[in-house]
Amino acid sequence: MRYLVPLGRVLFALVFIITSFGHFSAETIGYAASKGVPMAELLVPLSGVMSLLGGLMIALGFKARIGAWLIVAFLVPVSLSMHAFWAVDDPQQAMMDRIQFMKNVAMLGGALLITYFGAGPVSVDERRAHAIPATREPLPA
Image: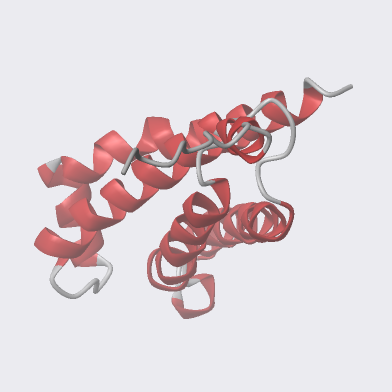
């Protein structure tokens, strides 16, 4: 059972890691700008960095709580700006945005759980927490 936690971490983080690379493309930046994202040329690549770093930190279980906060900081503005289904006139597009918004809400819940519980077993964080601190011998006088 202990290996279900790292598997869950990796599966959760995978979507952020894989999709982060698209945040550096002109198409994605242009799409965000068309949705009204201010300074899209700066903010979209920054969101890609946040998504990649947060995802890797969670997947590896290295400072996973900080990685999860990066994902939270990524998901909240992205969900509100890119998937504002309440402001869309086209019913099909509104439905697609609602689905994406609710998916992001679910992932936000997962990220918040990681901010509270941390990486769990089989992680860099666990290994570091149980490492024996090096003892220092006094220097000779």
